[in-house]
Amino acid sequence: MMANRTVRDDVRDILGMRTRAAWLVSGLFAVAISSMAFAADDGIRDIRLTALAVLLILGAGSAMLLAPGDPLPARFAAPAAVAAPLAAALAISQLPVPMGNSTQIWFLGAGSAYLNFLCVRGAPLWAWTGVLGQIVVSTWWTTHTGQGWRTGVGFSFINLTPLLMATFFARVVRPLAHSILALRQQDTDRAAAEAAAQAAQQERDERVARLGSAARPLLEIIASGRPLTAQEQNECSLVESELRDDILGGLMIDASVGAAARCARQRGVTVVLDDGGGLDEVDADLRQLVRTVLRDALDYADGGTITARILPPGRGTLASVLLRDNGELRIEVEASGAVRSDLDGRQDVREAKQDPRPAG
Image (cartoon, rainbow, N blue to C red; front, side, top):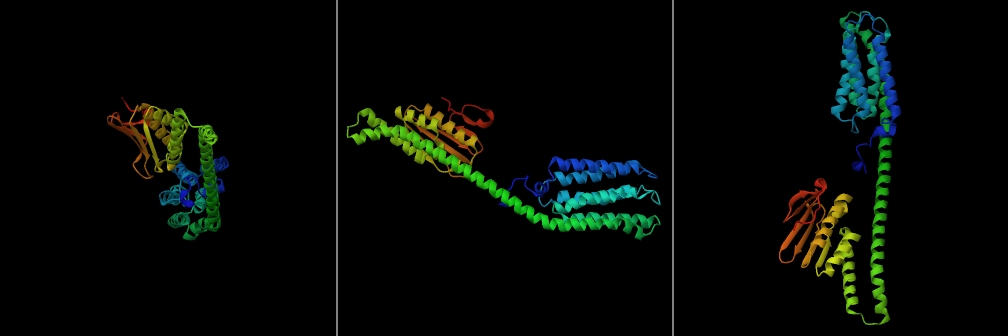
């Protein structure tokens, strides 16, 4: 599902534009462009403007590898497109008339190189705008320096050919890339679903084993026909409560919470657990925080009733624990990870790393 793709999933992953090899090629490109720009300095009036043109092109080229988004957003594509004619204007304004050699128009090929990748990144209109801007700058310069407009068009028009090829290449590759990314995401979702199902099955197996170890001896006594002693009847009541907790308590229950609930009932506390589903979509840390708060509340209670509820998904409050004895004490865990109680006020347990046990 395309909407669930991570920020790393775009055409760059398919073409290897995030790899070390891509950065190595970019480094070689930077060395080649710099060498041509500064070696062909015959008649150059101000080499600093040439250096600025080099930086513009290299910066725009790096943006093809670094800028996020697919297709490339206009806030990245537009400056990259403008960099090509701007660099051409800076460099060409310093050239002698006539030029010393053809290497002095290095900026046209350099700009065209990264504009081709602008097509691949899903911004062909901006790429064509950049190349046409180079042609306009070159034509303007040759016209105003007495070389004729045909000269400018002649040595800049050739860059339309590789851009045309890049445009058709992008038309073919980008849909395939999206299909590949969609298949990758489906595999990831399937693996996550299988892992979740396996974890749920493992948790169910652990609960069955735990209840089985507690219930089996009692069931064997009942099957034998022997009357149960008072202690065994009390044990049956505890096992029945544990079974009810496993059914209604859902993800609130783990081994430590189950043990704490059993101990609380042995002290005469009435424990009511109700999982409304809010823990299904939270991370493991927040889920464990709720269990910690519930376990500490169970350890704290000496009598009365504890009612713990997990609210449905999407609520601001994730869990609520109400202790009723001589008075009432309410503890709430928010979806943000903050814990509130009538005694403690509000504290962010996830940041403060404090014990969420109610004060008292």
